[in-house]
Length: 222
Image (cartoon, rainbow, N blue to C red):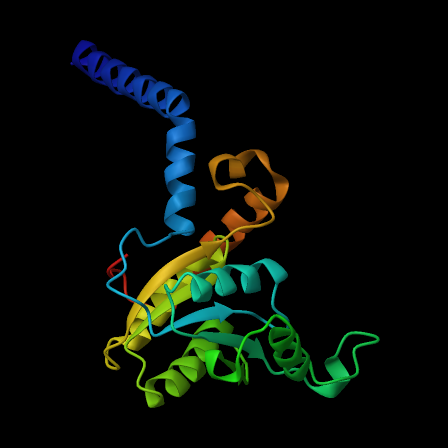
């Protein structure tokens, strides 16, 4: 009996060593796939999207605007929806006194973007922020008759944001396609970059939290 148990534990140990060895040798592939999962980009989009949603926060990153303008000029999106979170005057950063959405609107016009080519959506926020913001955005877009949208989001936040938008858009019959926007780290080497590591593990935890709280279902299209 003891001999049999010894062989069983020996086999388990050997399988564990093989599994760990395989994981070590394949770690780059595994990490790359994990990064692509958290920062998805749609491989196929049906026609031209009605709008490209640029998911900002209190402010919006310059490279996200660049991606949006590229989508607009290339004909992949008919117009832009720039999402900003409402900032109370007392909470504005030092030396920023004017209305930020107005500054964004003026700068877009300086780039030659017509008024009809973009809309700025300012959302009131409270926890859970991504869910609340997405509800406000989709409420506006659904009233405008939007049926397809490219969701331009930041880095590894894209997966959680995509699932939230997809879940909320189901009853509105709006198709959502992801466009991950990375600037602080490279997708093919994120695990060797401090910002990439921090963003990945932070967003992975937030994704698990959203799933556990039932803010998004366990299975959706992407």
